[in-house]
Image 1 (cartoon, chains in turn blue, orange):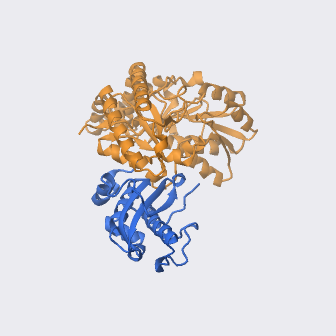
Image 2 (image 1 turned 30 degrees about the horizontal axis):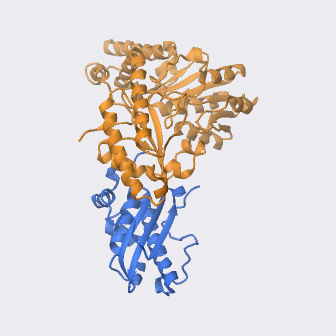
Amino acid sequence: MVISMAMYNDKVMEHFMHPHNAGDLENPDAIGNHGSPVCGDMMQIAIKVKDQVIVDAKFKTFGCGSAIASSSVATDMIIGKTLDEALSFTNQSFIDELGGLPGPKIHCSVLAESAVKNAIWDYAQKHGLELEGLKGYDPTKEFEHEEEEECEV
Amino acid sequence: MRQVYLDYSATTPVKKEVLEEMLPYFSEKFGNPSSLYGIGLNAKSDLNQARAKVAKLIGAEEREIYFTSCGTEADNWAIIGTARAKKAKGNHIITSKIEHHALLHSCEFLEKEGFEVTYLDVDSKGLISLADLEHAITDKTILISIMFANNEIGTIQPIKEIGEIAKKHGIWFHTDAVQALYNVPIHVTELGIDMMSMSAHKIYGPKGIGALYIKKGVVISSFMNGGAQENKRRAGTENMPGIIGLGKAAELAEANMEEHIRHISELRDYFADQILSKISEVEINGSMEHRLPGNINFIFNYIEGESLLLLMDAKGISASTGSACSSASLAPSHVLKALQLPYEKIHSSIRFTIGDDTTKEDIDYAVEEIVKIVEKLRAISPIYKQSTKG
């Protein structure tokens, strides 16, 4: 039943134990959510944007070690990036940055990809922006991704 | 760093006296109990002394104890062995939704062979309904198997009443007592139990050894086929060090049970009081009245179990969770699901189990660290709202 710390590599544990950018962002320009506490994980990413560049980001996550570690690297990676650059990140970018996640935990990185995308979508909606990476994207629809595990309810 | 082990329902350390008694059976007392010469005959005699100790602990006769490789084998054997033996009489088994997987997966296995299984619901406290049980009985029912006490939430079922119902209808009654042994006084005949599974490593004995009590007159099919060991009912050369260890652990359990129950229930109550008074919005899963003395299962609302476990582990504190995130299958606890607990609360549930070696200082340390960890995780939880802070 219990997963030992041995399951995660040192980098994942470091991001989990001492997450970067955790907490509330004051006066965020946009917020993206993904997941649900019912499924055991929910992620919220808030961003501040200036001239289409993400100047700050913070996260709040209800989830396991890898969900928190994924949130930490995802926010690290999008800060300083343009909206288009941030949209080009996939869950694999976050996994690579973490040096790998155990198989059953891959979906946690997908959660981070979706939360980032939803935050940018929220910003684009508010500012009437049309971004290449958001074409045809509807955050209300089930986010489709090969690696994503269905939440069994 | 201080190590505080609070997962005695997962396993227990082997007691020193138990280990000492086991050790000679690896080397100088290595004889096979089936051999007809000195060291073999001595082994046979020691084997039966261990059997007598296990029998004494549960009020059984020596010949009613059959050693197995573990509690899981005992469960598998009782269920599948009964199904095989009673096929002519019927094909219906009654169990509950909160059984151990050793039981549930054996039932699922039998369902594929055409057996029918009723999985009784439990109430919000984790107890089955005797009326539901009686109602589920048909003329095809061959076995009732209800666990004595649950491994996750510690709920103790009304075993005596279940035994009476089973007897009234002429149906065999099996109970998985792996968690109950040493934590609840058990007398199999007084409780009307026909078969009972036990495991050594939950009572400060070694891993890899268990036993099935089979009441005399109850005949089930063999599960392990081979030699004539265990009165021709469970083949395979006996695990002598393990059996000697289980015997010694049973002897110590009988001698220490009263003090053991007093010690762990006092610490458990103190632990629960401390957590509930120092952390807001914590709930307890399962009945407090009908509960194993060392078990407590908390819902730490707004935080996910695995995160809490990992941060506790980093402080040397060991416990376990029903959260899906921590299981290889990503499936949340079937026991907590059966309580009709909302999913987010299942993910926030943590089980602590206290044992003989736990001290008040251990509990104080654990409480102090858990308070900090819960605060840290709630601060980054998107579902923990300012307004809900206590």
